[in-house]
Image 1 (cartoon, rainbow over the protein chains, first blue to last red):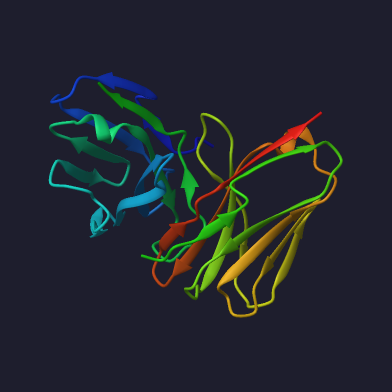
Image 2 (cartoon, one colour; image 1 turned 90 degrees about the horizontal axis):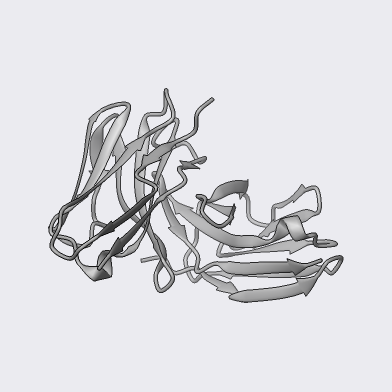
Length: 114
Length: 110
């Protein structure tokens, strides 16, 4: 079975550009999570969805960040405009249900903003 | 914000040695999870502990949840190079909010 799929795996862009990260959760999973990992701050939850509805976006750092989940098999995390401090590895994870303990992580997107 | 401190931050040991990694917080968690993350990949769940004082074993790995459900430890017996990776603890409070620890980067030298 395919796990969580993220694209692109690597992204290099210039400051001020729009960046869109994509995630396909495991089929049948109803909850989806976006995380950011940096050396300084570790792994941080940005936002999570349950049945395509955003439940908690308190971790989204600024209005430059937005996330959508138009259907059960696709989500995007957009940064506009991007800044060098947004450089990090962004992970998407999914779980069967909102209260399900086990989250399955994708391989991540490594973002570098110059 | 529930802060989870892990120690040590870095650990380099010889193959065959034993080690313990600690995860401490001032917050109480409904459950605590341990993950291992390898370079270029996402974290992979190793175990979930739920009950205060609970001990779980996964081959050479032993996980313990503190009695007060504020801390946890991971003990590895006879470490092998394949154990190399970033070990993360994560505490869960209600719903599905996971708060990740600062991580312990383990290197096992053959």
